[in-house]
Length: 115
Length: 109
Image (cartoon, rainbow over all chains, first blue to last red; front, top):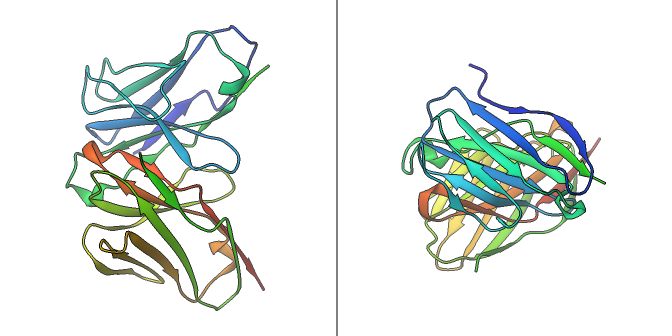
């Protein structure tokens, strides 16, 4: 099992460009999440999904959109990148609440720089 | 809102015991987790407390007191490889997590 994978690992964008980050999991998890992590900060939840075809806003959703067309994939989109979106982005997945100690499994991260 | 407070940095020597505290103010709270992160890599799950009391997993233990909105992670027999950042995280609906800012643990020889 590959677990949670993220594509790409690194990316540099110019202000105003768009891009999509891909997260894939092979553990058949229902729930998936996107976080961002900035220096000196914990992880902050951007958007999450509790199942195929569903998405919901987290703590810092502005400037991002997501889609969960397939259970195993969760896409994070930046329509018009801004320097404030320079960050490390982590995807995570978990089984439903009450299963497996509510553990979330994280991908290796995508390091995004917006110039 | 949700907020968690934990120390920014803790130092200790190999073989020692260290405790990382976490206080929280969250609505809809139903549990506290701890995650470890090495050098900006993927965070990995350490422990979860859904009920008051102590949970032990090898060298690591975690404690929760709901009445005090307080928890801690206890690391025993510290090793150099334990140098990492440790995050407490509170659980609310749909297993969404709110993370603290993290505690950097530095273990010296």
